[in-house]
Length: 323
Figure 1: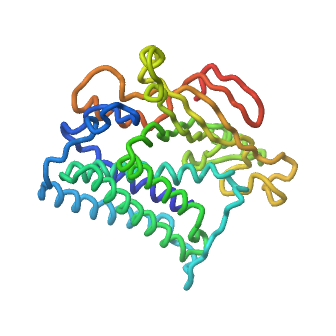
Figure 2: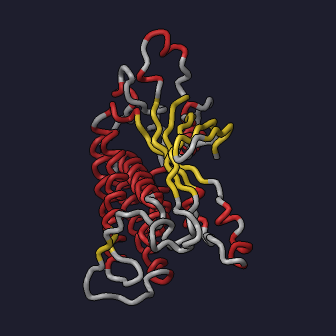
């Protein structure tokens, strides 16, 4: 858990370095295009000053971030050996928290990829450096967790981290995979919105937004237009895709088991996973140019915007707008 919180803050600090691009972005990078190479950002040669600036910003962000976490969270009983956690059951958050680790790794790796492109590395080299740098940072976080009784090294969390940092690398080296991407959405659940009222009557609750996993949905998006041919390709909007979402409902609160014999509230049923089918909008196709506006469109595309959807599990439900 603390690794997810740490990685969120660290990636926000380090990720800003990847947003400092000038005129290298040429638009949406979707697999299946006739000339995928045309959408690559062209290397202009290594720029030593930018590389030094990147190193300085990274070192500063690393120092500030970990100093904060040393004070905020790493105050429990320290161990002499690693506490290994093999929490594969998902009884607490039904693996929704693994989506957070996955997206943290993906966003950090993508941001570092952009940062290395900004310094002049070729796109594939930048993707490799971004993935390795991000993997190393997240490994360091897990190793800090590993020696505290309250936390520990979670093997499933780190598997999710590793999968996330690998996505931009896969996209760079195998362009056809860009047809698949990943996004995130959050709409506050009643566990978080009604925290005080639920606390007063000892009902399931979540105090902090970052622990509100019932309100989170993690999406795998699929670009449809590159897969079509002929008239269908001409008719389908290039910005419109499909999305498969994963979330959970009926959770028993933050840091407590939500299913199984050891669940927090034995009189309540087990929490259940949810699978959602929805439409997806690629915001990089929004009209307008300009450096700041293009940057905004790129960052907005991390979010799955409200759209019509159908829940297919655990029961059928139609949403005019799924938040």
